[in-house]
Length: 125
Image 1 (spheres, one colour):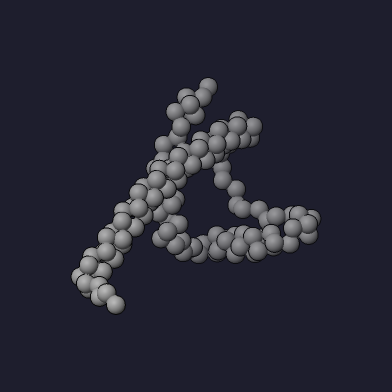
Image 2 (spheres, rainbow, N blue to C red):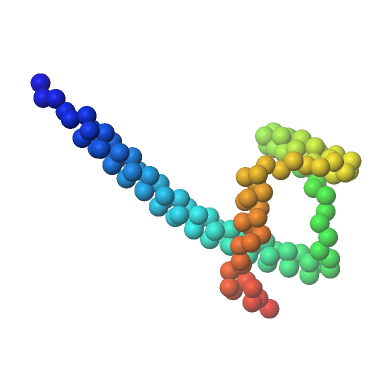
């Protein structure tokens, strides 16, 4: 039975792991670019919708979250969880309690806020 050199086996494993690491780094970069592009598009859509809404209502005040209607919840029972979450947040806002936001969500929000709009949407009439 041929014996394998332990160092060559280790070197082979290290090369495989290193190649996999390089591949994951490339994928991470690609996903970040795609995520940023998606954020730009979403930001642009939100900006356009807000400008339309502002033109219709004449103000840009943020409303408290509204509950999903009972008729809708009856049709889609899975939405009850969202109503519960909206109720919790509304109660905390009314009681002036702090809402703990996970760091990952804050990072995503920061990225969202710092992402520039698409060129065409910054120059709409």
